Image (cartoon, rainbow, N blue to C red):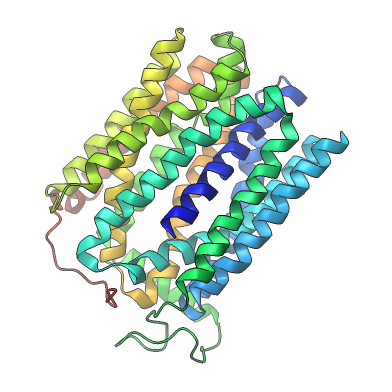
Length: 409
């Protein structure tokens, strides 16, 4: 599964950064990236809670087989329309919206499956390894995107991404059935092939109420949202590359990979650490570092300094992501994990998507550097607010009682 995700993440990151570049070739207006944020966020807001319930009621592995197949088809359509020369911003927004609906079901199932594959004590290391897979892919993918666009053409970034989903599909077939605790049986692992109960809105309400009663989970979700909202400047990177740094598509590919270089380094270090303590303070400090690195990114006028700033952004974000994911999964029973992840998806994916809207509007009105710097400052202010509102997060050490059930054998 890890190897399959590594290949798929590389393809997805190639498509993501190629898509940003594609938009820049279709229009020179930064506000165009706001449309991407809108068409991503609305489907996630509408379908995430249902997607989480599906992950708790049904076979998570089979859900992933379906969602991964749909995303492969969407990527192929991107490539076909581009090759035909008929693709427009409208097509990009529509296909991105379809992809966002699919992700609303894919992510809760994928994140909830991981605790079923490894024992609880190994979960922080597993999330570190997942972060490494994501970010190695995010180094390879963006770096290749610039080369492929320059040599083969834009459409091949989409075709290659479509093929990359086959790696995950093959892995899901290979691992076979995975036991999970489902809603309706909270006491012991239940074979996922067993008959499942029906869906109803009360189950979604139960998931939301559970999160509202868990200050550690709730505060970490809000921290994630505000940090991503204020410091979400990735979609402005093509404009930084072309209009601020005055570099071409190859250099843009390396800038796109810079965050992941930092993230892989941090993930490798974290994956080898055992029994990390003072996790709450480490989490908060890493998000502060994330905001300050974003400020440096906005102020930079040098290619090298921008690379360094983005590497720091990626490293700090990875540290906070590993801790956030571990806290949430260990504080959530297995039968509730899908719904927890679905609510979290609204926060951590809604933040960047709305942040892209905010960044595009601010960049249009006040310029690209101001949009990035002001976002970094907003991120730091948000951390201070969360610290004051939820002191439990500051005090969290990492050895508190674990609520999660159904560890892997």
